[in-house]
Image (cartoon, rainbow, N blue to C red):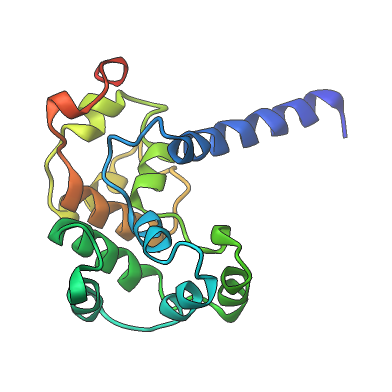
Length: 183
């Protein structure tokens, strides 16, 4: 492989992974947690319980009932965010479940926050083009029909996960967004 090709591939990988790495290091802590983070926080240090939960099959209403039991999450919006994520992404495959049970949190699918950070801010303002928009799930899903969004590399499940997270958690309050990300 030629040196230029290797450099281009490395740069491409960096561009794809950098937003998610920043999300995990705190730059985007102002945004509500997505379902993956909510679940890993709930079962911090208990990989077996985490894998068991991610192996369940339930619809969104059933996941919401589960999430609301004994106040598993901080508030109803967090419970709804988790329920939508779980309904679209669980049960995990046996390989994902085994990896998760052995502590590999990367076995969990990306959540709506991860997907927004990874895909929304490269082409337009993250602030005005995402963080300040109020839409219902069908409208968020409809954004993927726009010519400039059709080439975003997301599966249908990822798009649904993104749309549910966005409908539940956007818009943010102006003052909650750090000044350096406002425009």
